[in-house]
Image (tube, rainbow, N blue to C red; front, side, top):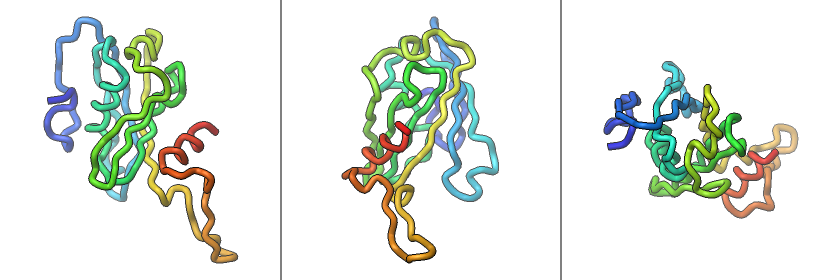
Length: 157
């Protein structure tokens, strides 16, 4: 069982007795019509010694599990704006890609208060479209070979 409980639909944090905890407000984009009826904001407590990889794995149960997407996990309170990426393959299997080393939450957020983390998803069509005037297919970051590379380019702007 993770901090969000067994049911992904409920999205309520489980009350854990943590000795050194950090409160983080989570939010994410909506993924479809109807998904934005309720707020996705959630305040949850985490052990401040939790590693970033474990934190992102916990977040993989907070964000909807979609196939072939990359979730960029962003916080203006952290050392790096992008903390890491939650990547799902064509079967929905999750892998984690870090921006920096796998340190603890307290090292990333430097003991700040009012910590907010936002999750934004990307899929392949986030980077291509048809030009309405020429009917040409336009590809953003065509030099990148993978979706994750494109997301990293977009997040670095």
